[in-house]
Length: 181
Image (spheres, rainbow, N blue to C red):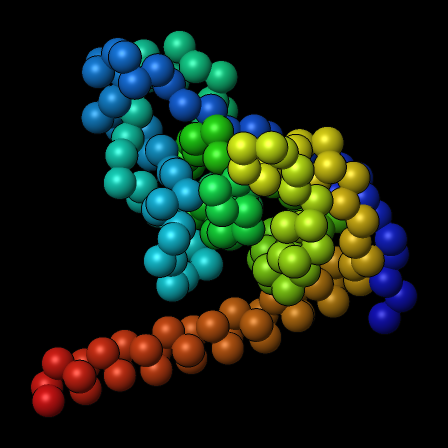
């Protein structure tokens, strides 16, 4: 298999999320998807497409948030640490996120999503702070990981995705059975 050791910033770019000022109502209810940790709190799917709120272009222009491309891994970095999803479309996130845009020539985003999910306790242990624990951008950038070749990553992610799809189908069947009884 031949795993290679990296630190996360060698295979991805980490972006902080940010929040437009809530003192300006014109910054909200626009066309830009804006994700918060609350949006992931009961997430059953690895993909997120919409948040409860949106921001406007004016709100985007007046904050340090970044428009993240589809496929970016979104990870809550405080309150709580470790909620994970993959952006199913372009979006922005609030300041409670560290967003991971993978270098596609080195890493498969779905594989990295599963890797981070499996190693979430290691990531949580990176948190620090007095009011509440938070994972800093620099500590996440220096997070060490061993990853296999890109083709092996894609094969593993494919298998895990198939399992996730079967779990989702079983949940839907169970939900439908409960509705009919």
